[in-house]
Image (cartoon, rainbow, N blue to C red; front, side, top):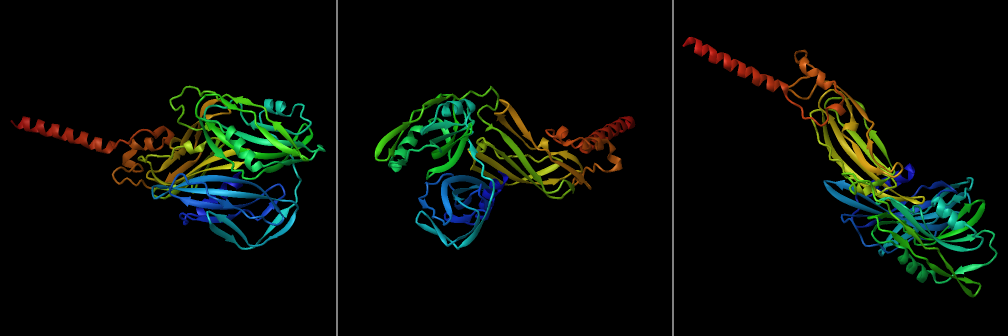
Length: 457
């Protein structure tokens, strides 16, 4: 998963100079039979939405076309958001070995994107059957007594929390021991009409962008099936209203005879989130934090680059950019924000990456968890949770404050404060005790002066 994320991130960074035009990106040229080769184009725009482009990916010798996925990433440049839309065609190799791919062309909105010929290296590996990952209850109901061809709409969640992602798939399953020959009948007309019946209302949609049938092998209780997947999208319910998935009927040809297969209807019942001041304002899902600190032991005045990536199966677009406020100890400068949504397996993953520049002003030991934390609703624990930074900064050297020197022997009264860990200090404004002391001393001198004047009289 990390490899996929950094692939999308690398594409985004590499194409920052492109405006309004599509650019072509080739995926990893060395992969195993279990992996796929990808050919992608990226469109950079200042608009948060774009019209769906008209595109055509080429046929590549020795490779079979799978589905097309899309992702969207955001980066803040000079205080303004820039959006990157990525469309990726996946290809699967039939056999291990070296493949010589001739020059190819991808057409995007009548723009021709050409690539020179290249070589692919496909390594052999043990083929593993894909295991269906729907909820256990639905798997039992889906495959129970199914010894022949059947049509199914499935969901990864039947009772998701409001805001939690659930993935709908529409597929035809044919047992490998089936002896009857079937063929599709005008799928170009049937499938789009059926997909419109699936899409639930009151949901945010993140589509996997399947434009062709995805064929894969699945196994359930040692029985093998070939799955023909027509549709796959992840949805995030906006409220607790029930979502009704209707029965769908698909017509096939059995030799020359027309036969119809019908899926079972079912209901998705979103659950309300527990009451909380941030209810409906934070992401819902299962997230993890990845962070990088350029240096953890520095001198005052040095610059540190801090990078945080919050990754999970929830809609991470809801993460707000960290507006960390500078204090007496650390100065923060926001460099960039990047958000992306991309498919991984049967899930739609989200990522929010932020880069922040840190300049320490005072020596001491600082826990960044006091400055960087992310609140969300954890679907694993069914409770509100917080991701906190685990990074620590050890700062030495002279204070940058020329008025108050906390290292000076004459300022012992202040030195206990700087030894406090940052998470005990954060939230309080630094009080310039020296100025208060000077003011107090001035008042004492004024009082003595008045007493002297009175004594002379």
